[in-house]
Length: 148
Image 1 (cartoon, rainbow, N blue to C red):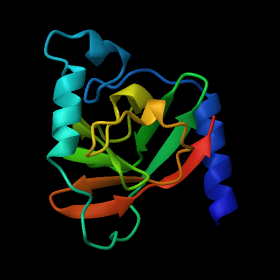
Image 2 (image 1 turned 90 degrees about the horizontal axis):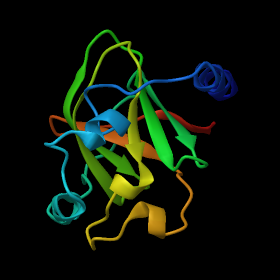
Image 3 (image 1 turned 30 degrees about the vertical axis):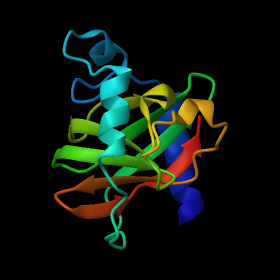
């Protein structure tokens, strides 16, 4: 089952992607209201990884593009994921206004992920091992991460 899921993720990733207006992708980063690095670090410093166990899997997946330094989060469900924190390796966090249902992925740059000490994920030379989303106090593990 896991092999099938990863194969599906690889096919989706190879098909190509565009930015999602809900997230901090390339287009949103250029917007006037995009958070600064200091704001991203402050947000991470004020939020702790949830102490709860992850709920059942969400119909969402993470694809890692190491060459471009980003994670693409796909929401395969028919409901948007709103006002959510995306956690990478249980330490690095990025806040998203939402992830639209069944649409283009949200793109999160490694450089936009910070931990509670203000360290950037991109400067730590870590592999993406686990990607989770926290919505309304519930933590969900995503399928993957698969590499692009």
